[in-house]
Image (cartoon, rainbow, N blue to C red; front, side, top):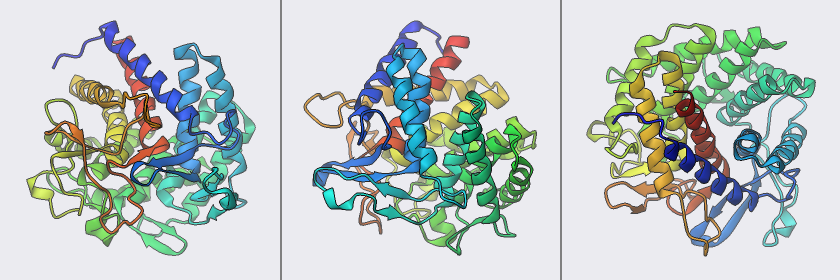
Length: 400
């Protein structure tokens, strides 16, 4: 496919992002964003999951701030400010962020304030990247301080082997490490008070990630490494690690040319003609319990792969990577939910069958809360992630 800068593509992106933003506003416990954003809707059990997650709120804040000038909707900037206030207030004294804080719905009035105290390294790595981006765009001392504290905390949890601890439990799987690397790369490049420590931690973590890359460019999965994240598809961790590699090389000058070529080559091999990325290939069906190669995963793969292709393109200027991002973006816009009769109009569900062209698939492999799949409609991880990626794609095409 030849990349086109035709304004119709850019116009479609603006429409798609506007629809995603409109849905996300229905998922705010407070209209001004000051109570964050709920995690997701579970379609099959008719439930809004009332967990307000710092990582999801950080992704949504970034989207609303970026979309406000593009869509000429200044009210989105005001909501971004509210989301940012909630995010900063949710940071712990040690610099870390909890898994979630419950903001009650009408269906769960007694759960208000309940907190998930687990500190996931991947979630905190994601927040660190988004705080660093926010700090770079808005020279607010409070945001810089929050990023510095989080960067120092994340580095303090690292093992000598390069991975990170989660409440003293070892988490060597790449999904836990790649997000930490992405956050540490952004923070180290920003030059904050604890940036030097982030650089040291990043280099140690990169050594561990590199040890997990296979000769075909694929990353070993967390399921293979530690028998966790059974429901996460093979495609996911290669996409996430590609982002970590590309950011580390572009922002910090660490030569990762060969592993980046391996990861992009592997993802290209999983890519269907319409740009969607299949869960796995014939050689990797045993690497995850999520092993249906007719499916593409929108919670763990597609949105982050969109960013990964764009990060690889920004680093290498290889038009094949921008082409892959464009085709994936077009695919995602084509399947965005367009049904005003449902509560997830304008969003994306978690799993789609590429071959049969319908929503299908579960993420319940040793995962009773079904964190993904066709019945999950996420705010962060899916809608905000995809829409942020589409805005980045718009900028790339407009500048081409």
